[in-house]
Image (cartoon, rainbow, N blue to C red; front, side):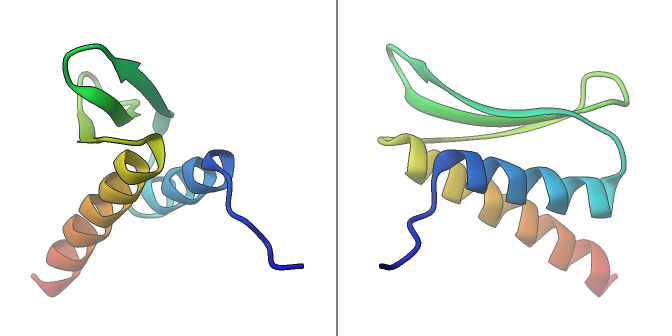
Length: 79
């Protein structure tokens, strides 16, 4: 039987990426908004800093957020 990723697994992966590269993370989560759809968000300990991504499904929103975090890390490491 193939392992199926859950949203919890995705959230843990994003949390780990952010913690390793940016430091303190307050929370990573996903919620549904009536007008926008699903919103994935990571909020950092240092003040009001946060990153968000939205999608039609919770999985899509989390995937977009993870890709956004990876893109920022890649850009930061290139400098």
